[in-house]
Length: 88
Figure 1 (cartoon, rainbow, N blue to C red):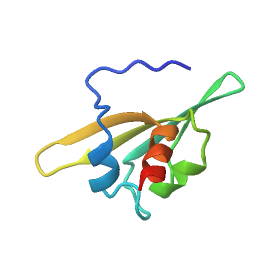
Figure 2 (cartoon, rainbow, N blue to C red):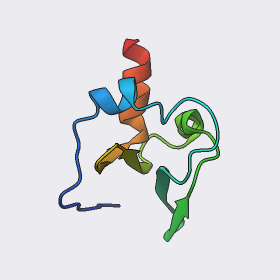
Figure 3 (cartoon, rainbow, N blue to C red):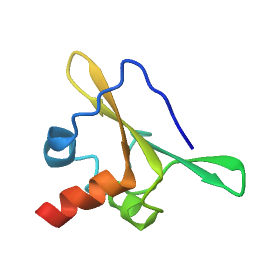
Figure 4 (tube, helix red, strand yellow):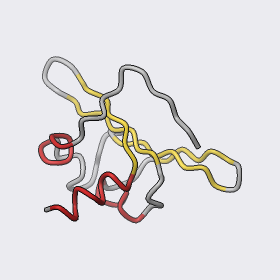
């Protein structure tokens, strides 16, 4: 499934390292997953950020990183997060 985005960041290094979105529970809706299963689009919200690593590697994730004066939004695949974990 192709997802086109506009105005959404794809520079992921700081998101994975510094945001804290992937550590712990109670994410306040900061991660949304998008999967295509049997022709249906499934939108989900993980209970814990790190649980996305158990999804299919081609699952799309949208992350909102809230800041003091603005929030940034990122889009990536689960495989990007797995690659980051493997480099640690």
